[in-house]
Amino acid sequence: MNILEIRELDVEVERRPILEDFSLSIPSGKIHVLMGKNGAGKSTLANIIAGHPDFQVTGGEVLFDGRSILHMSPDARARAGIFLSFQQPIELPGVSVANFIREALQARSDVKLSAVEFYNQLYGYMDFLKLDRSITSRSMNVGFSGGERKRLEVLQMLMLKPKFIILDEIDSGVDVDALKLIANGINKMRDDILSILIITHYRRLLDYVVPDAVHIMNHGKIVKSGGLELVEQIEQTGYDDIR
Image 1 (cartoon, helix red, strand yellow):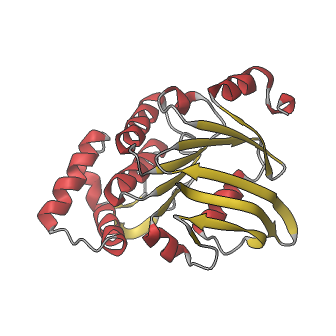
Image 2 (cartoon, rainbow, N blue to C red):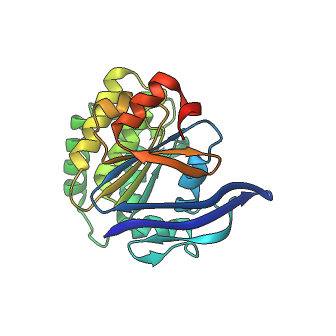
């Protein structure tokens, strides 16, 4: 079954077309990669799936888990199991890491964890990601390095256990050690249910997370699909030679 089905999607921003006749299917339990030049429409696609209000859908359909989601609020989509990891995670002064994740978990799931159960899970994943436990009392993303912010995104994924994850350049602005920890977190989540869309410019994350498919995007459309050989071709010749 396809967890995500995008059919002939048209998207505008301030009457300017961004996506045109865009289609993509991602089956359950698979990792797909989306690559392309700046301005190709990759982040627009991520925002549309997550429900960003600034983008206007003028045609087509987006199905998640078999049902249309275009009428759903961002909050409803998150509750349904969609998670978007931002390129630049925002700061939330006054909201601690622990409280943010616990509130998100309680909103996302009907299962209520006790404080002991919650912190046992949280600290276990933090140790796995090599995040200092003391940061749980600090404001979310305030004063954190790029690598810490991106690992906090992975921590949220591990705790929330969504059905579909969009990783919008989670490999940007991180050193190789943080990249390996991020990859370890992604690989830890892999199963027959969770699907992931990785948006990236580079191969380096894909040296640790092996995708099931790679798509190249240009001018609001997917122009070619294949495997890791497409990533190798881009590294050698760039996007202009992709047809």
